[in-house]
Length: 206
Image (cartoon, rainbow, N blue to C red; front, side, top):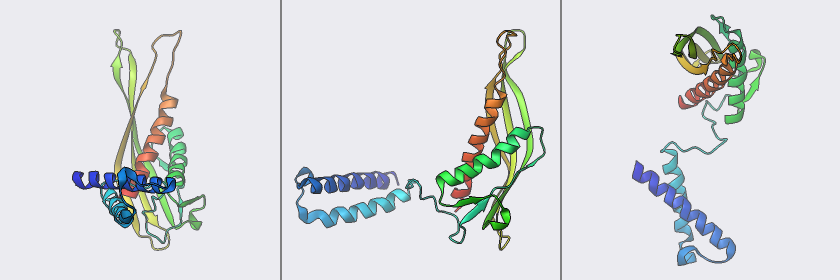
């Protein structure tokens, strides 16, 4: 597969060079114009090969069932004390869908073709490092989610994941003069990281 991917990339580069040379009125590396069809065929082959190597064209992540045009991401059920994280997650996931797919995100689940529901099952934060006196200087936060994407019309489960765990590490200053708790910023990073992983997992499922 690596050889196939390498050949595909090489063919793409040569095809690009051929097109650039034609615009200038010449041909790359002295290749006659009679080979134009060969280069075009190679380019098509390269695209097929690259698709099998995990390469995707940006903005074309249209991988869910063709019947789906709109997705709703309603507020998550929260079984933890992190209400800020529960609020941010649906918003960040919706933004990921908008930026990486062609689907329209709607606020009303009754107007959506598919609905992604989520639950914050558990949230933990544990010290990972401490100073000489034993006071924590860094903390690792972890959240466990339960997610389900359903076709609203049929009730078909398109994607489900239980015990989906994510982690984020943040620092705490122990100095009373410059005390700094980064937990708020860490929750923002954690939410964006979770959103990216959730959309990636859903798209990879198709």
